Amino acid sequence: MTDLSLGFLFTLLAILILLSAFFSGSETALMRLNRYRLLHLIKNNHRTAKLAHTLLQKPDRLIGLILLGNNFINIFAASIATIIALRLYGEAGIAIAAGLLTFVILVFSEVAPKTWAANHPERLAFFASIIYTPLLKILYPLVWVINTLANWLLKLLGLHTINQFEAPMKHEELRTIVTETGSMIPQQHKEMLLGILDLEQATVEDIMTPLNEIHGIDLDDSPNEIRKQLLNSSYSSLPIFKTNIDNIQGYIRTKDILRLVKSDDIKPEKLAAIQRNTYFIPNNTTLYQQLINFQQNKQRLAIVVNEYGSILGLITLQDVLEEVIGEFTTDPSDSSPDIQKKSDGSLFINGNITIRDLNRSLRWSLPTNGPKTLNGLILEHLEAIPEQGTSLKLFGQAIEIVQMDDNAVKLIKCRPKNSA
Image 1 (tube, helix red, strand yellow):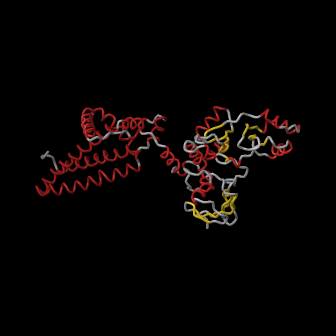
Image 2 (spheres, helix red, strand yellow):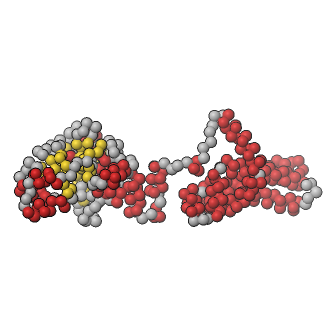
Image 3 (tube, helix red, strand yellow):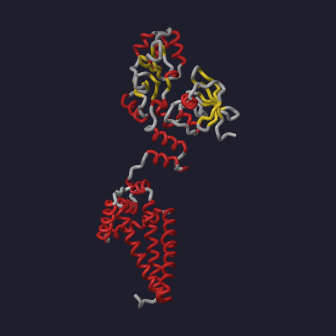
């Protein structure tokens, strides 16, 4: 090699530096590929995407091949640079060549190509997969020896290798992806996707109508009173009970009693005859499981009970669906019937609103792993029954208690942080 001209040696050195840049950049590009977009391209019969996916199935082999080629080229380049330095400056040029080559490789073969590859992974990764696929077959025996020794060393040190490319995505990771999609997904669709993801995290107790808010028919009332309640009810299903709401007998669907209302023949025994059996569910049932239960049992209404069998509230199929697609309201401008916005920007909020509804409607971040309603959260925070007019800061949000109902917070007033 000492007989080769300097021009040829400089040309060979430049080629080696470019090859080193290719190996370094392609490593970053292949590891930066979005695996879900890769799977999408494979379904659309993208040939180079299939090659890249096959290579990434065995990342230890791919990395072994890339590092084998990169190290061989860098060592070869160092040898060429040493020969050039000896010819030009003698032995003193060896130190100059080492320093200069280190700088050139660092900038032109490492930082620059890896930075570009990180920003455009598909362009380089798909091209590199065309080269690496046959190259891996040719050099497989050598790559296998290197990987075997490396894996043996890791095992000796008590370290285990896991293929992160195939690791399943966790719930919170998928939620973050949906949240950070920006304008790629319309806001309404994004909220629906997040609602579906949250069905596994929330329970029926999080969204149920509490016991004290259940509207039902008391069979001990007079026929005229029952008829008036049926005519004025806006619900499609109504629980029926005797004397006390805790003693629920079943429920009736308003469409089943139209004949009785028209004929004025509304008697407790007539209602009892057409009642449907009560469907009870435990309070820790997830919304996803309850949606499945509603479908399998052909039910639209369920009574929520605790571990002692005491009734806590009521949940309907509509309640679960609203967690996905939002509130069913007659006025599109109403974000929630429990939140009233005044002209000065202040908000009056019903104390019985669930924390989940409040967070969703106002983009707040109140904790959901404790009390299920705003009233419960305030009482837990104060550790006492507040008086009307009490002001406090609830997890950074200033609120004022406007109205109390016995020992419960009925209405609060607040001004959102982002309001003037």
